[in-house]
Length: 131
Image 1: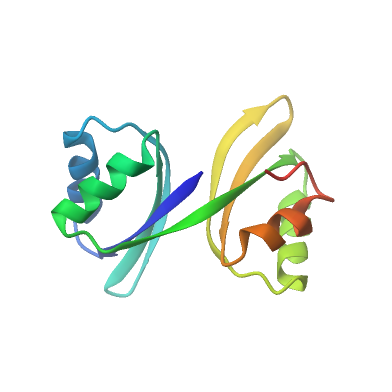
Image 2 (image 1 turned 30 degrees about the vertical axis):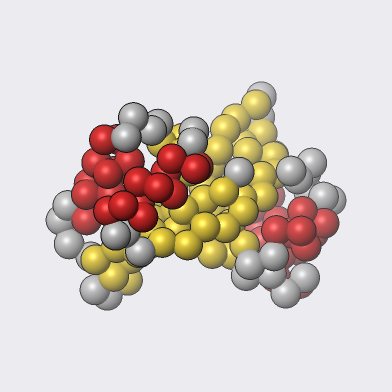
């Protein structure tokens, strides 16, 4: 799975504009997270159709990059996120975005968007079954 990291202005409607571009092509958004800082921000978006999403964003002139998502189930208990992110840090892996992608029992599946998904899967293998 890939995440679209969309650059946004920090203004009302910026995310709505991008969401409407995707929706206009009949593409379902599966996950989204984001934050602003100063005058800008970034949304990490996953969809059911990456090829169509790429075309829709390109056609609209939206600035974005794509990065692989590494998913890992984390136990619903204090410290599980801390352990996962510390493993990534110790492996020299930068987290570009993080989003919940599902739940199963007491585990929450977390998607990490990183600068090195192969190393991320290796680093996270000890805290869950990274995929």
